[in-house]
Image 1 (cartoon, helix red, strand yellow):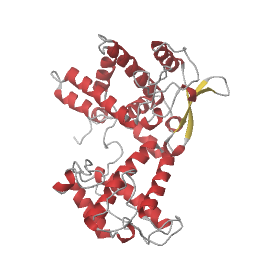
Image 2 (tube, helix red, strand yellow; image 1 turned 45 degrees about the horizontal axis):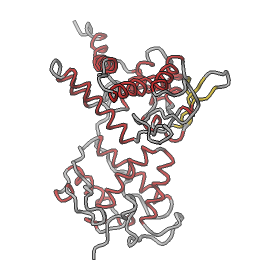
Image 3 (cartoon, helix red, strand yellow; image 1 turned 180 degrees about the vertical axis):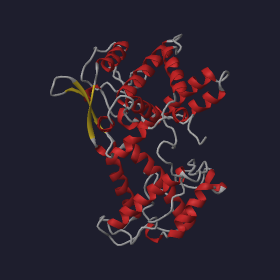
Image 4 (cartoon, helix red, strand yellow; image 1 turned 120 degrees about the horizontal axis):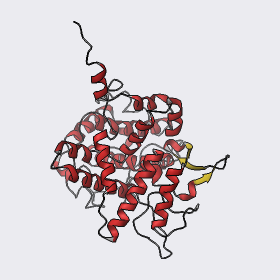
Length: 374
């Protein structure tokens, strides 16, 4: 009888029957445990990193077991090449449920992954995983090492725009202001939209940061002024000032829910719309709930302009929650020194901050309008 691809209790582990090297510095000779240890390491970075790594490695592991009939120590460079080709055009039976008998409803590859940046992101995950296995002596060599990424590279100022353009941002602000209030739920949703958008824009938080934080993370600093304590990407900690406008956003939303004006309690910064416990406390939205919630509002924004400007509507539908952070940092870059902005954003490298000092194409057009050889 065929062994299940994955343990039913754990989406990220191989069947116990899959074994690999004799016990290494990892303390295991089993692929399932090796993967679990790596994912535990990813979890220490952030919940979003864990989600992304788990998704990609579970899919890769399922493919290895079902199609290649190989364990991790047997994977070759040719196998990685073949897997990337497969990602760009998955075989039909992988786009349907039934591949994994232990999870009969699971669809591992519902859509093809486009060559370029999307494929490169998968390669980055695989490289990190196999590099970890090699460094700990679990396997010899890294089959992903030196793999050529196919994504285009852009010169500074010519990459993909991830923030809201001025016309898009105007639509977002208008929709926040005029969101319907006919029902109690709509009133609650409008209050939550203004709360989360206001907080995210004020602090340029990442999605993975705001979903973990609560009012308990707002503390007085050495000078007595309030600061938001954030454990960000790579567990790097930073403290952001909570100015009067930001504090007012928090107070108004808490009062909307008949909470004390401000208290260092567990009230989430990305809350559920209704209390989840009998004591009236609110739960935190999960990463998936935040993405779905944000996409729903973007659909509302797109619908508001679709008849007059379908091209603008389409651009709005393509935005992600992370666009809020990019928008906030791009606006701050107009008046803030790059070193200060890097500290505010929690960037480890100043080169990451440089992207927010890029003039838009329209500005480049104006600056070069009279340029040319007579």
